[in-house]
Image 1 (cartoon, rainbow, N blue to C red):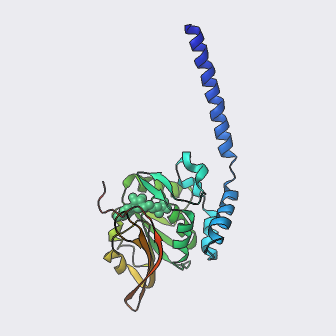
Image 2 (image 1 turned 90 degrees about the vertical axis):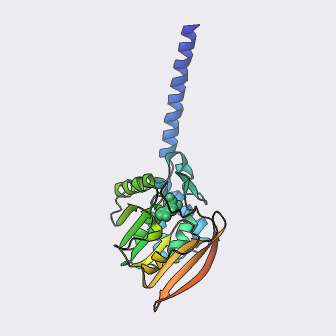
Image 3 (image 1 turned 45 degrees about the horizontal axis):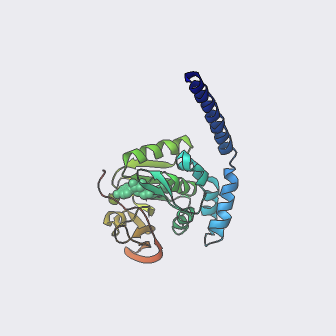
Length: 240
Ligand code: SAH
């Protein structure tokens, strides 16, 4: 009886081994480039994304490298995905929309609040001169920093901290993108926006639907426009 059991568990581990080999093989066979092309056609071009720089960046950056391994097969789906620590990477369309609306130029210096996986920072980094990104959860900042340097993105600086306060030492910025939902527009960010600069930020009640606000600064005056209703994880103020 004991030998039979031993035998069975031996067969079981061989089977498990074969199945995992198949899984690894199947994953390595996923054509990520093709999935990215489909994403661009079906989710971006089919909607209102037409800025060439945004489309080029979305075509190049390997989104699957920014999500946990078990959800890599869904990396190019038309939705947000979990990245751990109860946070999410935005839907590809939202990433592209928020990038396009900033009308970025190649010499721009950009601030991002809410590094998360580092994906949005990588997209921005393809288009502009330098990206400064702040993440309040240390573990996420650490992973994003390592991931970005392993992938060779060397014009992106990541720091752990409260992005509500911006990054005054590196400002003022040509553009600011906040990728966590705020309850109001943080005053320090308005201060750190250059004359002629643009900011995109989701603002609204805690855990509710928020409005994506496009803010511009002209002759010292702040102009605000609501551009889309969105859902985002909240902008928090303490590191816990
Ligand atoms: N842009 C990210 C996704 C953002 S999810 C990506 O491309 O993957 C929102 C992120 O904002 C979360 O990681 C959350 O921890 C972070 N966050 C929340 N409040 C913050 C704050 N005050 N300062 C900096 N980051 C904050």
